[in-house]
Length: 110
Length: 117
Image 1 (tube, rainbow over the protein chains, first blue to last red):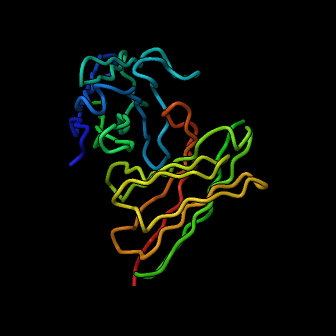
Image 2: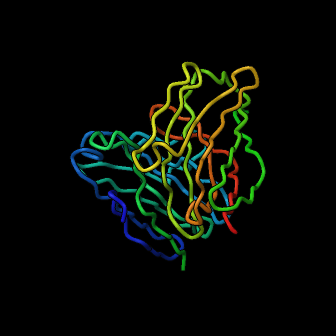
Image 3: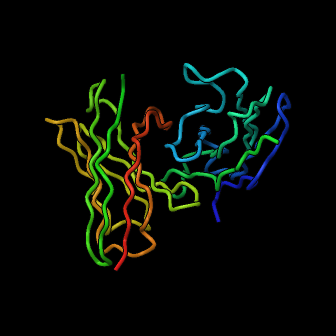
């Protein structure tokens, strides 16, 4: 069981807005930046959002991140079929002196 | 472009060791940490540690200490992950990733390590 808690699954129809949550604690999300990754089937993870909110060049502005206290969220608006993937949050943990990943959320576009 | 290219798939017996390489190109290798992350089939991502290619300094989570070693050869811009005393539950895809302020970009393509008798 991951220290960063994500829902195992999420779904939406094309054009909808979906949100994926990531819950942690004061030693990780509460005091460090959160990054989000997208992993398409059979491929390596790809950085989607870094340091809570900014997007790397090339990532559509349909993807947005936020953080409040010990929780973070990834929102995807205007859902598209190609968004069907696994999504992971990540943060450094000061107590463990290590990088944590959430358990991942499998997004299905209905 | 910035790229990390990993070595090919490996099949090992329990108790053996495996060494995976990660060749960097498109940037100054010694300017960014390299991290390793693994993923068992159908499972999530598991962080295995980091290495500073400039100093060689490393950091490993407690669960891998004593069993994992991260090294580098700066002359060929290549990082290595060595995992010893392999068990069946070490079967996974192993990724290297360049670290920039804690976020990982890019990632290597992954190396499948299968541990089977």
